[in-house]
Image 1 (spheres, rainbow, N blue to C red):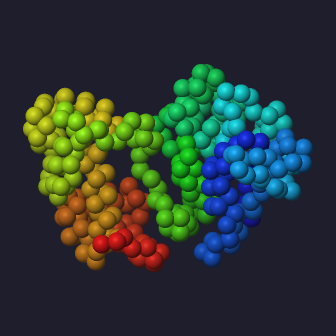
Image 2 (cartoon, rainbow, N blue to C red):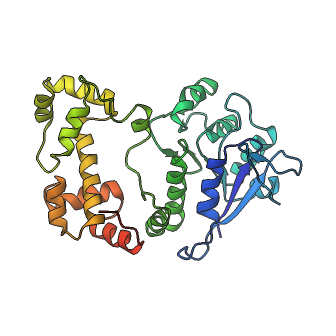
Length: 323
């Protein structure tokens, strides 16, 4: 059984602690043999249960010894991104890494990993709100605020909050394979692989509904996804030049017009696969992806599984969208 130690210090965020505990420690019927041996390790609390958030205390018999000898050590978050992590934890992480452990941070936990020096010269992810501060405090680290996680093999850093689910599913995929990760994602009612990064959350994905905004154009486009829309078509509708549209589009959505359209079409295809029994070629037509072959190629690349497999898995999970 691969062992995972979750480092808990006083004051760490509860949400980032709860996600790995639920994913790695919950006794599920469909988990394969040799599932993880999860141990929540209290660090620097002198026997008292560390406080996680304003309401909870983590009571655990495990501590520094179990953390140092684990196969994977996970740091859920930092109690204070402006202060220094406990020296005991920093030393334990360095020792665990020296012994061959895989180190993983979630959200602001990247500050703790950065304090070990193990991120120096590497690219790291954290919550986009903390990216500038992490880069300022640890200039030897290249901070990427656009991605959900960065995996260097021995060290992995994840973005903020719900990106912890993406990181944990990635670990399951690495350790137990895609089929197990997809099955677990269905149980969590979460995407097996979320396309794109957290850049889409840095600015509001859709602009406010003002007369000079792109919101009317986006609404117009989503009602015509099955048509072969081009940048020129969108620019004419917005009464602007294609170059100006691309610039405004990126500022408003964080992506290009054609990438945005592709994302909307994949989303429409997922809805049709979940809610209807239409054949794949009809789903491709209605979602604007053209042929069944084109749908399979783009859907598999984005979602992680082919359309028919996605439909079967969704139905097997017993989840149905309301009509």
